[in-house]
Length: 346
Ligand SMILES: [Zn+2]
Ligand SMILES: [Zn+2]
Image 1 (cartoon, helix red, strand yellow):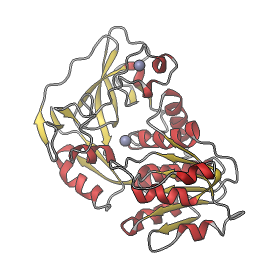
Image 2 (image 1 turned 90 degrees about the vertical axis):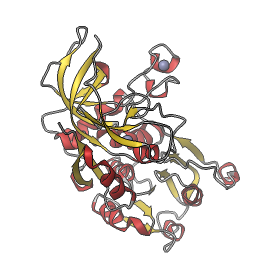
Image 3 (image 1 turned 30 degrees about the horizontal axis):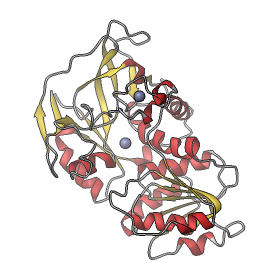
């Protein structure tokens, strides 16, 4: 089968290779991939920016769904033909404190699909059955392939942060995770939702308004701090979700958050930040990271998708074969596209 492989720890070390269909273990299913979304993670890997995590040669891709074709002898509850979407923690130890408490996404030995072990920019993936969730009949494969970034946003907003009805929420960065965070903040009853981006993000900011943002701000041309002072008591946002991760984004988050407010960081900066955190102290602000997701979050997100409460179609820019991975990566880096799904080729 053809696969998009990150083959060594070097910038640009990605190519299509022919690889064998993998074997599956007694507790695993073999799944025929329907779609696999491209995430910022793959772009970082491509540029050699996540080499501490990467385990090349490895097939890229972690946002995937498909159809069960083979079932290991100890697997219960799945049959060939089942439509499934997979979590990303391909390997976890099962015995550490986090695994035992169901927080396996924080297992120190976690290996994710698409960097630690082979992912889904290919035709078949073997996966532990405990990672698989049945896709409800109401949910398309296209929507299911976007479950993962929705779960990232859900974990940040509801497992790590608290939103009360009426709260002012700022989302920095209108990529897929930011756009899903916008929708989830709305669902949670947020008062005013503001999404900020740069000049390159104008189309994505239009989408953010369509998906529930009250205001969008193009930085640095427009000043979100001036805007936030006009909202509610003028003291700032209850929650700032940083899905951009850059140094200026963190500085902006500190400027926008209210006293006793929360900043939840999802985006990677990849570089040291040249800024002081003293204001977090004097203003009693909580700054925290949010990573990945676990079973409970996936089930909640699938239920929201089943009920039609989260929109995925407006984010879907294109569906392309895995052989067009380079063109797809370029469209995402130039911000022409929001989310691209790849499908396998024979
Ligand atoms: Zn992702
Ligand atoms: Zn563990």
